[in-house]
Image (tube, rainbow, N blue to C red; front, side, top):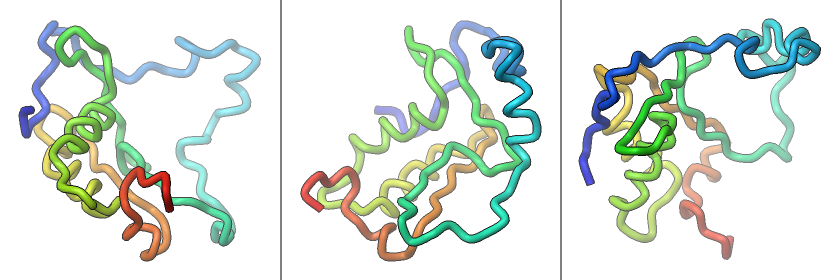
Length: 128
């Protein structure tokens, strides 16, 4: 596997699609301002670990990888899983993803939010 995400081989530009291009009009009013919203209170103890494709002020990019449309973060996450040595923590996985993103083609910075002990969990371990 390659250690770097390649630019879109089809030559199409990666672009932001407004909600009106993929959501019914009745639902758009429900999401206006959502991307800049912040929680007013800390998340409770029942929260899980969150791994996101970018910072809240960045865009997560989509493109074609080979013959498949995919998000750049998803592609980097899948490629990184094959490169991890077992057992690997979620922090290890995030660190491997961060060797691929951000890049010149995909300027997005993956994030991981959660308690410190959660970041040490074995990645995708069903026996936990």
